[in-house]
Length: 185
View 1: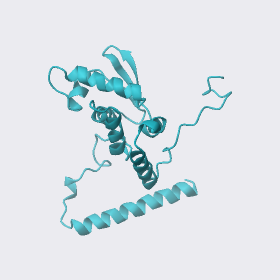
View 2: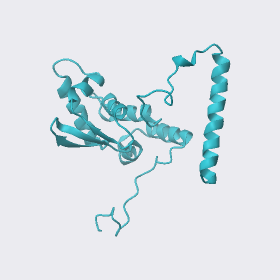
View 3: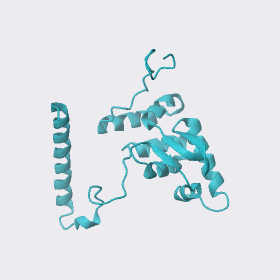
View 4: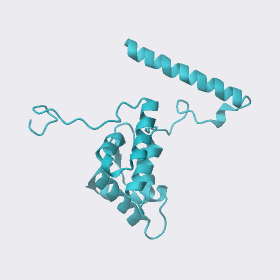
């Protein structure tokens, strides 16, 4: 472990200690079994702490057809590799809050919006046009959409990213010519 990694681990540890001390002082009789502890139970995923703001941006960009909950459902179903295989789209439609005869078509409409905005990429498979879904870094996508987002909303997301130390809240870097990532290679 290098010095910066050790310092970061120590900083996180001190912040966690402070939070626990504060929690214990405010709720001294708390039964810890009533808390969600991702280290003690299964069924958790990694989600950006900026997700509520990202969802608000998505909803604002999709106007009367909000797609934020559709996006969030996919984050709740993926692992750190950002790939989601959707065998039963109706399940995700219901989890996103859609019901009735138009649940699936409404979900597909929201998925198309997420593809159009660039938050996801999708490939067809046996379950339809959204069988394979790749969740892209929402901070990079937001930067690409910056001109379409209200300045105050964008600034709020930037501020939150700084607060949490999200170093990826910046424009995507263009591939360097001649590298494997470059179309010129």
